[in-house]
Amino acid sequence: MEAFRWFAREFPDDCGETGHLLCWTLALARAGDELGAANKLRQTMLSNLYVLPHLLGHPVARLDLWHSSSDAQPDCMRA
Image (cartoon, rainbow, N blue to C red; front, side, top):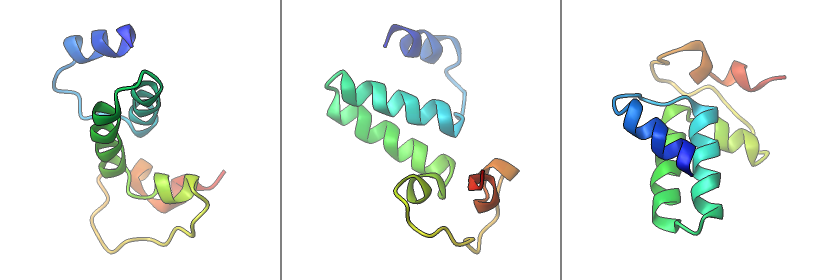
């Protein structure tokens, strides 16, 4: 948690990278901070609308919206 606190202090304007946000969410949940984990999960979901459905094993169809980067597209979920 100290590393995430440091990151938040050093980079307060960072919009977040999906993998980093997901790890932060899990760390908050494991630390018992349910409200913090819920808020970070929302931020994670908004950073990439495809990642959670993919992780949960749901079909991922391309959404009809502007994708801010190639990482925020369903094709990035295929390994």
